[in-house]
Length: 201
Image (cartoon, rainbow, N blue to C red; front, side):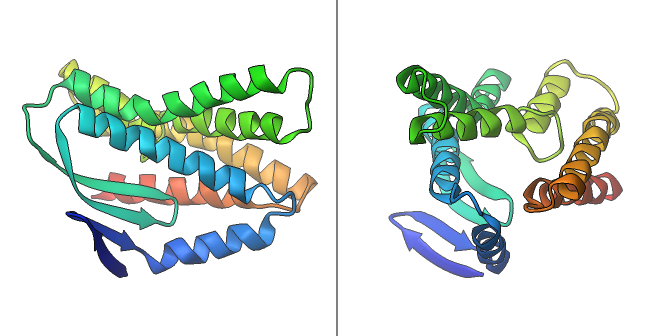
C-alpha cells in the first residue's frame, strides 16, 4: 500500500489498484481509458464535493481495485437526507455530464462527445444498481435504515443477488460471444465475491 498526504488528507494506493488499472489498459482495444477514468474521477469528485457541502471532513482517500473508499469525520450532525445526497451525487454528475455531452454531440454518434456521453451514462446507471458496494446498494441500505426495517442486511443481500444473477449471466454471455473484453465479467465476479464476504461477516 503506497501512502502519502495531500494537505491534511491521507492518500492510499493499493497495489491491486495498479494491477486492475494495468489489466484494463491492456484489454482496452477501443482506447476508452482516458474517457473512462475521467468519468470515474468526475463521479468520485461529486461524492467529495457533496461531503464537503454536508460538513464532512475527508481524512483519507483509498484507491482500491474497483473503486475509491473515503474515510470522513463529521463536523456537523448528519442526517439520512445528507447521506442520501452524498450517495447520489456521484451518479448524478455522471448522468448530468452524459446529458450535456449528448446535447453537444448532436447527430454525431461516433465522436468523442458521444463516447463520453455513453461512458458517463453507463457508469451512472451501473452505479445505481442496488448491489452491495455500489452507490445503489448504499442507497438501499440507507433507505432501509431510515425506515427502521428489520433484517436490513438480509434484505440488502437478497436484492444484491437478485441483480447480480442476471448481470453475471449477461457478462458471461458477452464474453463468450464477443470474447475481447472481460471487464464486465471481472467486475461482476468481484461484486459477487464482496457481497458473499459481507453476508458471512
